[in-house]
Image (cartoon, rainbow, N blue to C red):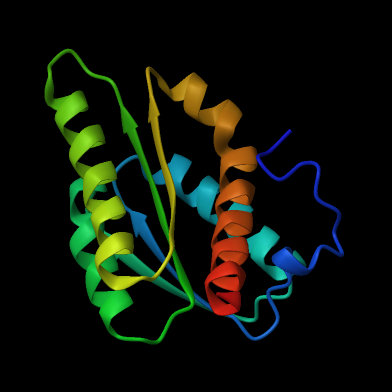
Length: 153
């Protein structure tokens, strides 16, 4: 069950009509990222989001800068960061995971634009594969819910 599994499809917090969503997707671990993107955009469509723009970056560490520029453009109600970092044999995994997450959080706090973080941090490809559909869909719901919440405040 996803993070919003208990919400009904007619929940006003999940109404995406009229929202503009920007998605930043990594090229690194491309097959996994494309699966996350497909799940996310399918869910956004189910929620009524008609305006979705896609931007591509090399990897997880490049997300924060692209997200910051998009947030500063005032064109989007919410953003989604899609990527996948798979543990390797070195400490680099921790650096990439921690710094990309920190940068994404900083973008939200500095700009006031919500960012759904759908950058998987996993031990291996098998862990990523089993999370693709659920996490991609969760990211869509987070983006829509947070956009609606901020509009209501």
